[in-house]
Image (tube, rainbow, N blue to C red; front, side, top):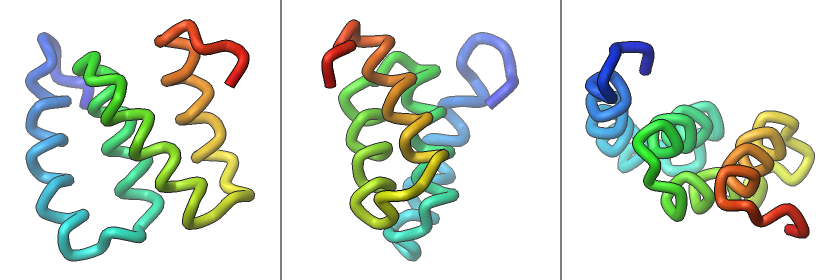
Length: 79
């Protein structure tokens, strides 16, 4: 994710897609997917990944953090 110019985020997005196909309920992978998509400014996908994390584990602090960051990026403060 830390490669300049979005290259790392794009690579992470591609790698995580395959990993999530095999492990769709892995919240760690979903967190990374949300972070990669957020960095690429694909905010609806980042929000979906964060919400999926919370559907799996409603007490997940990482899920709440990921969702808060995405909603803040979209100026959806009331959600």
